[in-house]
Image (cartoon, rainbow, N blue to C red; front, side, top):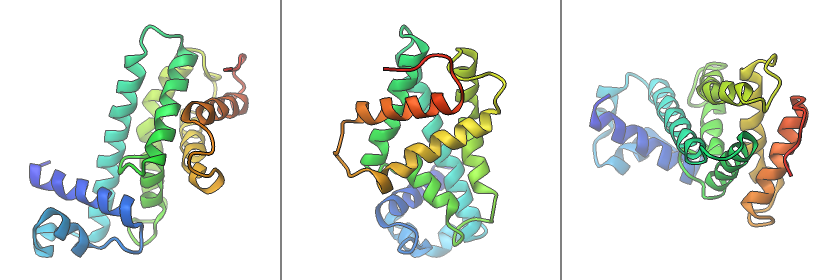
Length: 193
């Protein structure tokens, strides 16, 4: 990927996070980067290809960020590391970060931008390597499919803006509640406070 392509993908995620689906256009993305619409189409053959590339780019950035949070807690117990990670995901959503789970799932579910059924699987699959590590650490039943755990995690975190008023509780309280729900749902044998 060229630097120019990365700029376009970052711009699409920024515009989408700020404006949402219906106010995000290739024109707005091009203007954000300071190039013409034709330049965007020189790098991406269609709007769908652009959005799928932005989703893949955002998902890889999100997973890299998750790995940094996970590794920063290397000395802590696995359950505490998971709690730190989900706390960060909640904070990303609340800040309307371009690489938040909420932004990426909204982009992936928008029929205006992506082919049906392709992008959500790509986003969920991007989190699967982390879920496998959580399974290996005994946080979830290792017999469960990591794609389901990843999908439920992203769904729980991304539904928060619809169900909880911003600032109603601290990120750590919300994250602890989500960890309890997630672990209970996947039959982990111990809870997180």
